[in-house]
Length: 89
Image 1: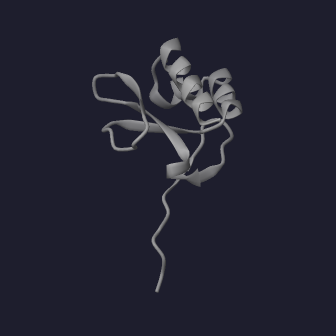
Image 2: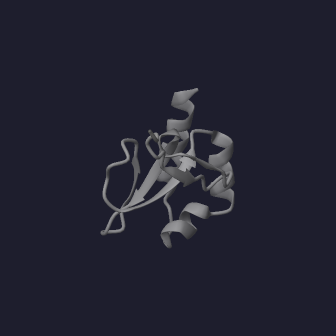
């Protein structure tokens, strides 16, 4: 018997492939709204970041979220992501 396939996603901060459930998903929907998807079920284009503030800082510095979504990311989204990272610690 073979086990179930584990979906892997690449972190925008560190660039490592990790289990999808270990990452925070950021979503851009059809209307162009950016939101944080903790469940992983929201419709739209997703980008993933580790539950680590260092990875978030790398992604912010290199503007990788903006590049992934081809739009400007507001400071509110970055603030919410930072709060999400500190809540886990």
